[in-house]
Length: 141
Image 1 (tube, one colour):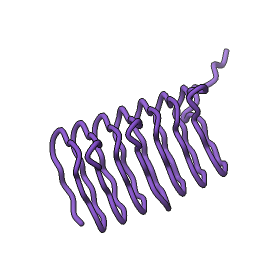
Image 2 (cartoon, rainbow, N blue to C red; image 1 turned 180 degrees about the horizontal axis):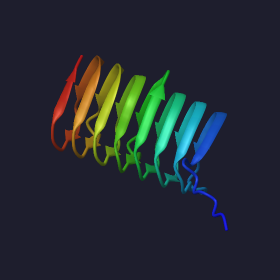
Image 3 (tube, one colour; image 1 turned 90 degrees about the horizontal axis):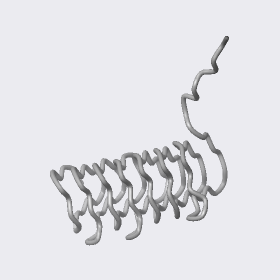
């Protein structure tokens, strides 16, 4: 008897606008190509995002890999339990990241309400930390 192999990846999605709503949690890794991505609710897994803009005001329980031609924003209510890594024109962290931040962009900013539990590594035209970082800060601007 042949047993089907488990899927190697979660959902692969190509769309104009991708939204994770509060009332519709997502329970697997997401690989998304979209003009804009908005996480308002809970994404239980990792998010790999190729987008114009990415905004997280909800929760991602895993890691976020963001490759954005626009902005990556973690709002004050936004939370990533894992790490945030990638590249964007502008990165603004006002919420929390459970492990590490490793981003490059025209600007990488951790606002005063922003919190990185472990290390913050950033490269860009502007790299500014006004919030809290649990361990090391490294980078170049």
